Image 1 (cartoon, rainbow, N blue to C red):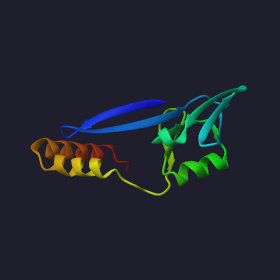
Image 2 (cartoon, rainbow, N blue to C red):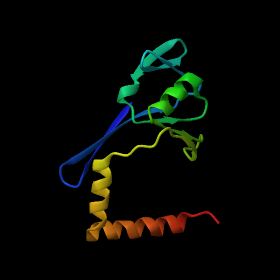
Image 3 (spheres, rainbow, N blue to C red):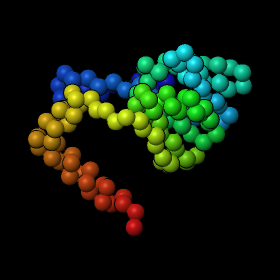
Image 4 (cartoon, rainbow, N blue to C red):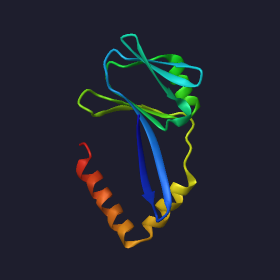
Length: 130
């Protein structure tokens, strides 16, 4: 489990907790408000209430009950290929953090925000597939 904190627009803090599932042969199941991560009879737990995102690499299995709980709680689940490339995503009910959204709108109104937006669009155009 990795926790990342970003400072947005002065004093607004945004913290995101991610669970990275990287070991082939791992099985993830749900029980009593936690995800149980099982590998060769070793069980580790992660409370669902603390998660914002789950990242899954090949060879990891999630039970249907675990997937349903992630979807019901709006916890985004990202599936990557073995080389780290994006394969797909599961996302339940979409919700946004209003403080983050407001900070994003305010950032666009600055010269830094405009410059950043231009670089992002240029990068997207450059990286688009033909």
